[in-house]
Figure (tube, rainbow, N blue to C red):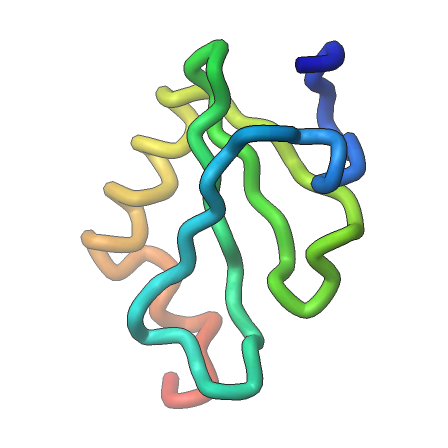
Length: 80
């Protein structure tokens, strides 16, 4: 795999498996995650699968997920 960096075109991340939430809507508006061989996690917008991917460390993803589980971002949803 090429050198991985923030903003890399998602199509350059060969051999990764993109996963989205089962809660995503039928129009494909969702965020997708892929575990990278080096241990980082790539994130892309499913509406633009050929667009850029942001790359985060496991610690950054863990902090995000814990914050989501604790409701820290509930104010960002349309229902809030």
